[in-house]
Length: 151
Image 1: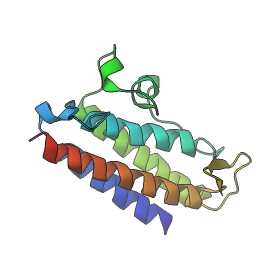
Image 2: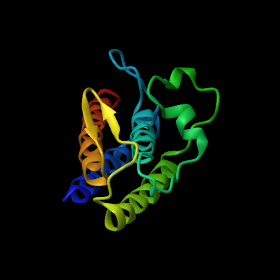
Image 3: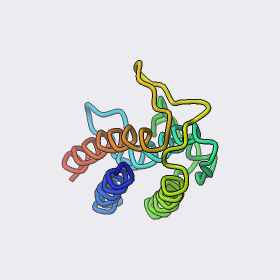
């Protein structure tokens, strides 16, 4: 089931975030564009953006998250104070609960406005969760590399 994979991917991402020490959260080593904190917030923003294609999804993120963590943003350009790792974990859990409810209640409901990317169309919650699990996996790997590079 797609919700199982998404829940696993989100849990793995949180484990890396929780393993990071304070000095590692915002470090951006050579060869990288973003930090562990940015990657952790970014997966939440992408999930929120993609899930908004469902008329039944109830957004959970404060507007600041999109400003800091949307595609194309960088920590070097932040003028606002980013949320703490604890706050990101709390928002991640809150979003996961909203996604689990959405999956349970509307998992196979066809979207009026499908999500499209790179020539692929995702038109229901289950399909979107498969995409988001893939996306979370990419950022899990990036955070693992950042964790090693910033010891």
